[in-house]
Each structure stands twice: as structure tokens, then as C-alpha cells.
Image 1: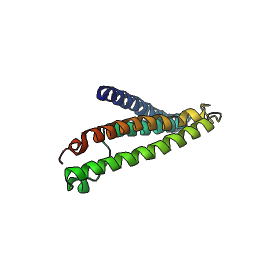
Image 2: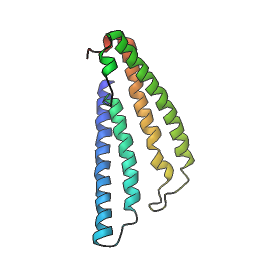
Image 3: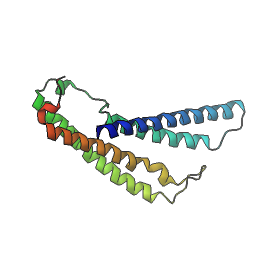
Length: 161
């Protein structure tokens, strides 16, 4: 399972990197065409916005997968192993609950907006919002695996700070 998650995280980060490059390219083209050529591209702003949103969600999914998100560890560092274990269980459990809600509401929103079309690129708006349930499921899978490992190994699952 770890091998699959490592491969999937690399794929997700690779997609995020491609989208960042696309976002940057769109913004550069937007500036060049608007200010140097005086003929703004109608699609570049919308494309940049969608690529940025997808990049942010994909990068967040990879960060959750790697357990590489922002944390203030002062409390955890000063707890005994059992306390750190309980804190990790609590954090992962609450994170999973949050992601279940985000995934559910994101899926509802994506389906509801599938018939709406973006003004310039004429993409289904639901396809833009589909990143929310997609990455929510991916992050949830990571947290379920983390919770399983924590429960299976007990307090010895947490390493000393």
C-alpha cells in the first residue's frame, strides 16, 4: 500500500507541476498580449484561474499524503509517546471527518454545476469543481491508511520528536 501511495503522490505532484507551468504560461501570455501587443487574450485569465485552483488542491492532496503540512508541534513534542499517539489519532480522525464533508459537498456542487458553462472557454463548471471531491477522496484514503497504521501499531507508531 505504501508503494502505491508513493507512486500516486508522485503522480499528483507531477500533475500539479504541469498545472503550475500552465498557470505561469497563461499569466505571462496574458501580460504580454495585454500590455505589449494591446490585444488581450480572452481565455488566458479564465484558464489561469482554473489551473491555479487545480494546482492548489493537488498540492494539498500531496501534502496530506506525505504528512507534510504545516504543524505547530510544541504540544506534541512535550507529550509522552501515548499522548502523541492520541493526538495523532485525534488529528487524523478530525481531518478525515472534515474531508468526508468536503468531498460530499464538493461532489454535490460539482454535479449541480455540470450544466453551467464557463463564460469564455465554455467548459462545464462542474469539471472545474470536480477537483474538490477527487482530491478529497484521495486525501481521505491517506488518512484512513494513517489511522489504520496508528491503531494497528499503537503508541509505538509515533516516533520520538
